[in-house]
Image (cartoon, rainbow, N blue to C red; front, side, top):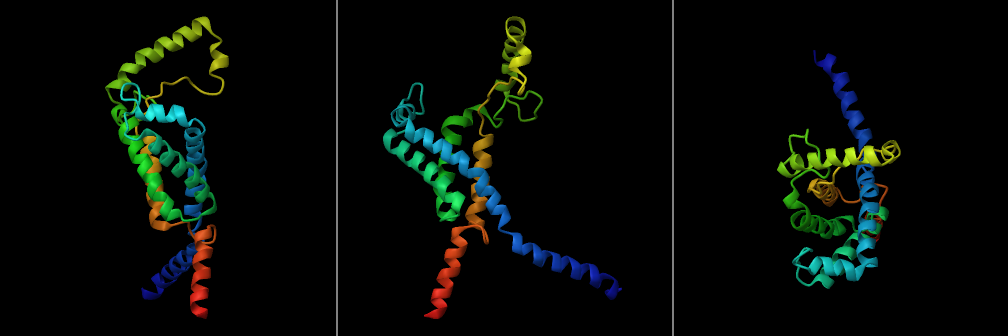
Length: 206
């Protein structure tokens, strides 16, 4: 019996050992997915600094945040330069922290009141009353476009939906960043990995 199970167990262990050489792929894919998202968001804030700061600080139609200019600079800088750092895998753990903070702030100040879903989907078990109420507006919008517009052309690249703007994306990005906080940039495909190797070699020589 022991011989019967020894081969599958040995094969399983050897497979896990070989897979360890590719463990850097998961952090790499997370980094490459997140990087352009944050770079674009950061660039938009920094390129439209005055408008963003006004939106951050306005308590009536904006977020009503304190020190809006400082918040704009911090959020925009963290997102843009953090995105660049994610691409090359530099200080991944350190940059994950301010990026997670921006996601928490965004989730609480912008998305929280809209519930979970980013796109209104009345069939979802996560649909709130706001989403259910929006379905009549979606129906009327489609009817107007079908009657007065070229509906086939308007929908040739995708169906018309209503943006719910819930916390779904912010929460997803937060979880991905949290994973990077624990794993770092990953083996082979990040500057952090090669810097660590260089530091260890330098320390061994000394």
